[in-house]
Length: 127
Image 1 (cartoon, one colour):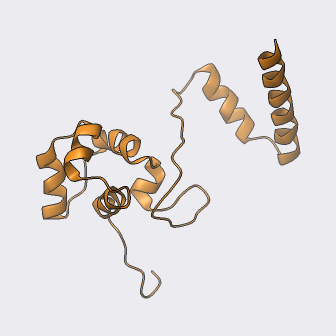
Image 2 (cartoon, helix red, strand yellow; image 1 turned 60 degrees about the vertical axis):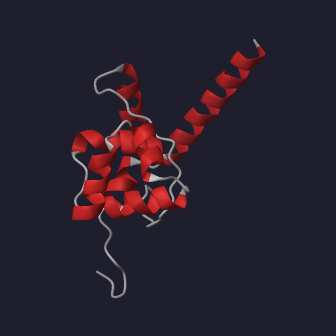
């Protein structure tokens, strides 16, 4: 670990983000559907949420699960504020297969596919 960099816990990131959003713990509890006492325990005892709480937390705080768990976004940069548009895809669905196959393509092929997608989307908007 680099000298001078404090290693943040999941709960540290949660409370930092709550503060950055100008949100109270009470409002966070209401919007996330979590009990206020549970959130207070994280702060008081410096504990982290259980795995079943991760997605409601991410949705409410508008962060990715990757950032919440590690403090690192997809670009590999540490940030306290991360854009949060993400998609959860059920495994073994048509969309899952599409994404998995797309990930294995070279950059040029991906660019061509994106061109096709944009052209098709444009045609659908006109039609």
